[in-house]
Image (cartoon, rainbow, N blue to C red; front, side):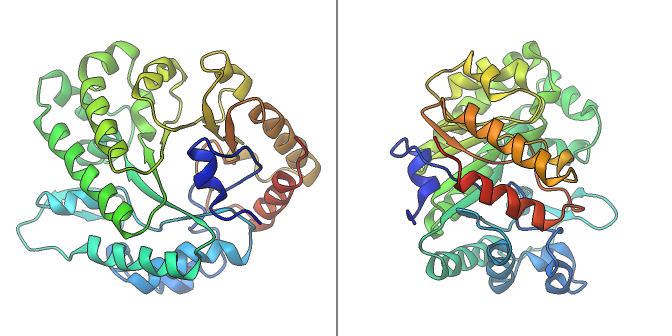
Length: 322
């Protein structure tokens, strides 16, 4: 089997069938809760062995071509004088006490992954500036009223500083061995095109330039943001991860020569096997028209997902005839 296949597709060096799933290292896996063992989530993220174990766990069940690093996009806040709490809802709060060096643990975990699975593409993950900021002001919920108000009032310093801290987060993963960086600006689709151009685009463009300067292919993902796709083209990531709301043929009308990722609706993973096979083949057929295509979901794996459905989809991807 071709090693580092997804890395080669993302670099435009290969056209082939490949698959991974956003949030594939997570709560749907049978052993996840036993690995967590009741520990607070931040403590869970501060253990290199746990990072290796959870990141690698999907390989036991599903024939994926990449390992996504088990981490959290909010860790850059711990480098800005904040602490993050995940129990009873996500909250970001000022904290004068010194936090653990989560990046050190993350780097050690990624090095273990690289040594243990040298044939797999390792995907590092970071949040986009708007999405990450929304957890500070709105807890990542709703219409992001407070976040939007802060940006409208001209308080962009926090967004700009946060963007730089996210770049440092990406660099720590890249330096440790991540082959590809996926940027999740998941919630920026909740702003209008005008709002994006006025208040976000300039900072996001600088942010993407710095991420790309790390020298690793960049995948850019945002949910419910088809009205912003033309703006995203100007950011020039290596791969565009498309959510399930737009068929890949629709995105091809915007960019015919792109490399794309996606885009099965994760909310239909409870459907019968025949339906999932047909949907997988449909998406693979559309994806094969691009310069490169990585099969994925249009958003992350849901906690209720049966891993057998993902295994079925992965088999269907790999046997697809171009």
